[in-house]
Amino acid sequence: MPQAVRHIWLCADDYGMSHGINAAIRELIMRGRLNATSVMVLAPSFDRGDAKSLQMLNAGTARAAIGLHLTLTAPFEPVSESFTPTRRGHFLPMKTMQIAAIARRLNRGALKLEIAAQIHAFAGAFGRLPDFIDGHQHIQLFPQVRDALLEVMSAATPKAWVRQCGRPRAGRRLHEHKATILDAFSAAFRRKAHRHGIATNPAFSGTYNFFSKRAVFARLFPRFLEGMPEGGLIMCHPGFVDAELKRLDPLTHPREREYEFFMSDEFPKLLKAHNVALGRPPD
Image 1 (cartoon, rainbow, N blue to C red):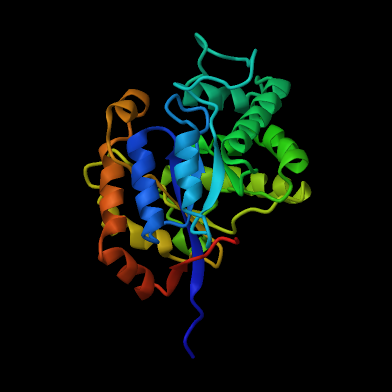
Image 2 (tube, one colour):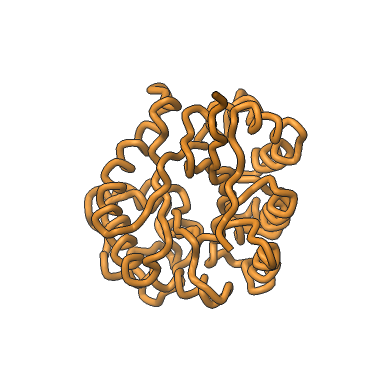
């Protein structure tokens, strides 16, 4: 008896970071190669035009879930006033922010205000609340940040789901150190989300060494599908490289390689071979 097709989320992060990223993501959604994207509302070049162009893709039949890409790390600046701690007006670098969160040295009240402000900015740009929330550089998983986020979500976005980053058991490899760390943080995150009544994706994949010369995305993607259950989520970062992207983020040319793979004929064939399809967001 043939197995039922598993429907997954393929979510492009960082919409809003640059116009090159935005254009690539919109094209992939329009062609049915993505079904979710998360928006960085505090990026300097993000504006209502970017929001409108994305929202138009859901006119009539919805093509993609649209979420908030919560951002709390450098080089970006807070939306809320008097956020602390900062460094010359910007968020702390990722590693510094992680250490502060684990040591519980962050200001929980300031975190809640900033998270609420980014949700408010999303609602102002799109005219509605986000379908889901995830975190730039997985910041949503860390102590203090996760508590503040879940408290704000339970009050402000009770119908939204939140990204956890635990892999399906069939897709786990112990030598993948970053993914193993995310598995550990996600176990606690899922428990806390459940207590708040907030839904999470049942499994996650998509991490790899973006800067390794041996990282060939077309060869990596089949691994991301291993053991992925119904409703599982694969993270990706397609985009076109432009000056704004180079200014803000070291992840540049791998984005174009991901875009090329998703646009290729190989991609839908691979999904079919693994008995997987992209789910359709609710209208």
